[in-house]
Image (tube, rainbow over all chains, first blue to last red; front, side):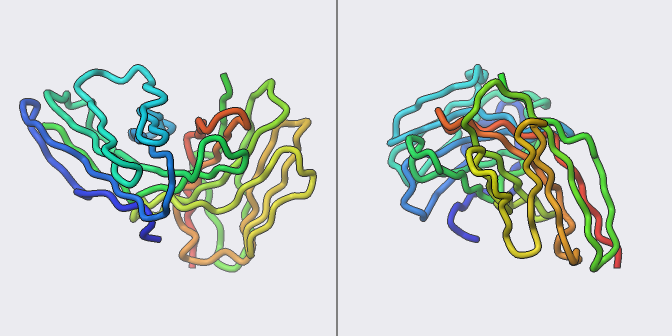
Length: 115
Length: 114
């Protein structure tokens, strides 16, 4: 399944670095999501975009900054991260949040390690 | 807030046998959707099966089927004729019909023994 792609797949960064995660969906979907997956914890929803507008921000620290330039692309800009931010970051997309049957499809994730 | 509980951190099954993964959820809503996702070592989260709460018939997708008990708020996944490629983390998820915000369980790691 290559409908949702993420780059890079692995990223190691220092606490003072600035980096960005990229997500691209080829499914013609209108909504995109960022999730954080930490070891032995349920997936945590970070950001939701619908038609390129942010519709939800689940109290995520400002060191994470999302950007959605169009409905196919989603970025997560990272700066001055902490070691506890090390996790798998998953991107997902769905056709339309207003649809009752809407289903999210996930990318392969970016494994982030903060030193 | 809705919560999803997967009480089995790990499960194992012999190849070709059947295994059932448990999931319970807590909600006051009557209209919602339930999902099982599979996450193999590649980490790609793959949709396995979906159940609509207003449908009494249990969803089936090839070797995968669910036992949806709405009154008990239970949504178990049965994998028949288990294959080595079924080895993965399995996540149960809940979504309200009113919005698209998903609630995930902590996952069950399934091992398939040859």
